[in-house]
Length: 117
Length: 119
Image 1 (tube, rainbow over the protein chains, first blue to last red):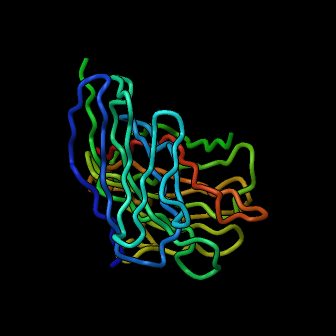
Image 2: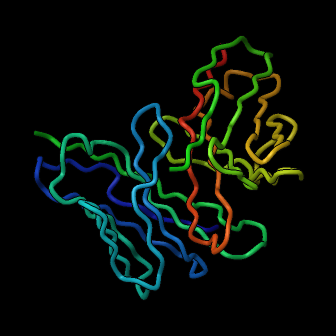
Image 3: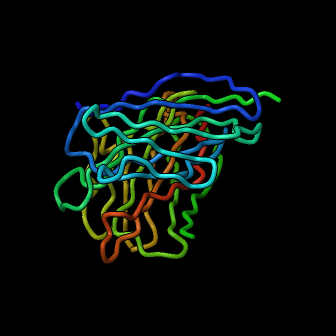
């Protein structure tokens, strides 16, 4: 079964610190790796996404680092704020083909981030 | 930006009732929508892929007759939980993907979910 393994399960970071969440995947056919942020009682919201042809992507305080050979990618949240406290999910999918399973997201188990003042 | 609306946000009903949940893409046409189920403090579990004008594709272990999916238009997919029982209580979330030229980069946009509680 296709899997995406995410760690840690929970994370407590001081305000202003760096939050780092890691994911590893198995299926080398995956070619799209998004990160989603979910607040309680809400649906996931897309934060940032990356493709394997780049090793890093930055958008504001959020950075994805991607290591294709290790089949790993990570989310870095710089200058973490209490408002960043949420559950973060990494995901992976295979895109650009018309077969069954195309564009389906395989999610990690999530990381609950708590940013304390 | 893309917006996906899900309705209702919360349902509380008696065992044996059928419940319909709607998922609408508000500013784009979605040929593909996805339905997920999420248990407390758990990840999203894909239930089915809904394709406009054709039958939904269900994931292994998901009962087709229990969870009826209809995708009658490019902006609306519905999930009906038939004869719901307490074990069907969960958070149901839909997502929609915007197709288009060079569409491999189009992400899934999620609704805000429906909290279903069966008494």
